[in-house]
Image (cartoon, rainbow, N blue to C red):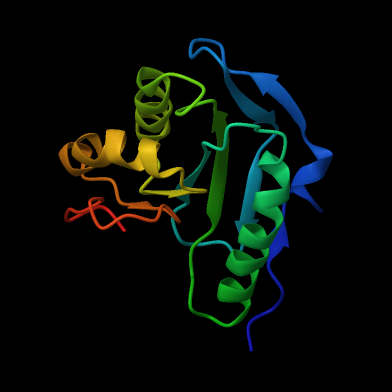
Length: 154
């Protein structure tokens, strides 16, 4: 059994929300969320988390189970590399604008994320489908539609 991983935060709820400097109605958490094996060695993997729910107050609440899943995967030896989770909340459709959702996804891609997880408003997933397939950075969402298709859309 591998030693318990280290996490840079005890809970994501302890991080303050800050406004994104260039994308309207978009917020980040102030601080790094890194889960890593006790023994260093592998390269850091960046995973984006895009909350696109209209209310947006629960960005941190979604993250704690994700952090726990990465900690478990590292502890069980299924994930040998450290992971930095980059969380972002955007007010997308139906109350916000599609262009902000696209900008938020592309910002995560530009920050080096090799995967983006999402809470999954269906309208936003449909807006992002072609952008995701063009960027070739996988997106896992809970959106409920068979129209969200593509090699990088899950």
